[in-house]
Length: 139
Image 1 (spheres, rainbow, N blue to C red):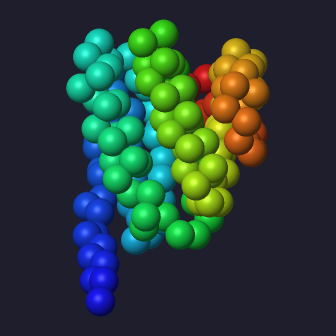
Image 2 (image 1 turned 60 degrees about the vertical axis):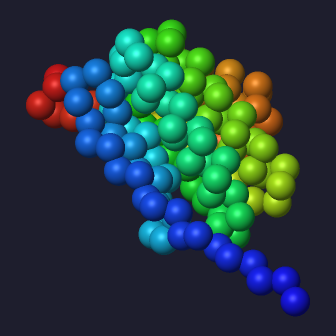
């Protein structure tokens, strides 16, 4: 007799700072998002645990996941790690997980939309692009 144990993955919730985004990875609530600004200088210490979490969560991701990116800005160092997350999501899709990426961008920021379109081509995942309007207090 084979006994298979499934260890429940702890959710990740990282509050945003002036240099790092809010991160929510919650299998139970099916919430996966990275929101805000990412200009962290120690990108590996921030992003590697997120990538490892996705690797370890694969067996528990048994339904559609909508992974939301709602980034106002990120630097080149963060860009590479975001791409690594997208590659990990592609790997999950290849293993049978129904992965969809929702990429938010400001209607006033064509560059962020173009970056999302470039990422979509690079990883060959379904992306949904959603334009946000600027918050009135920022205008």
